[in-house]
Image 1 (cartoon, helix red, strand yellow):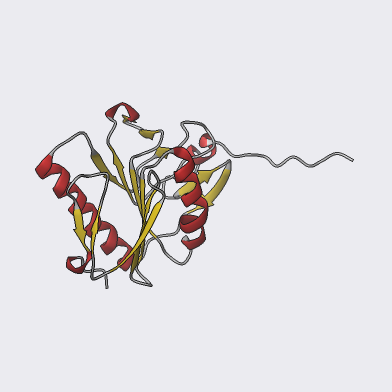
Image 2: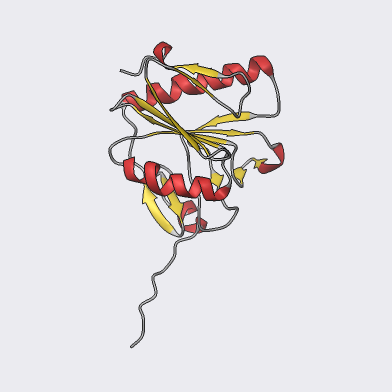
Length: 181
């Protein structure tokens, strides 16, 4: 008996989507992305500005980008993600198309439709690719989970806490100052 072969999608399938359709590609499978709600956008904007302002003030090699920003996680044709916030400290990984390889720090703001993908699938992929730090912000539960893949530590914070980053030396995001509600 012949086994049915599943057709894997590639980055070309992502490029061929209509311009107003956002999707990610993980291990050859396309995942459609819904429109973010207001709380999601407020969380992204607040954290992005905190990271951007810190990098601008203190300098260094890191660059921060906000979605939609292409990350070719394994630098292949089968995995393409658009994290909410991406910090890359190696300028050689960046070009006009996006980031080729693992960013240093990824921040995702989850929504009900992306919860399992962000908390399970992408968590594993980011760790495998060599991302150093991964933040999962959950506006519904008002929790920030920080994964430090290099030290294998996981920390949980609330929306009243100050959350430090190991990637950007001296950066602390004060969630009590971000209006997410």
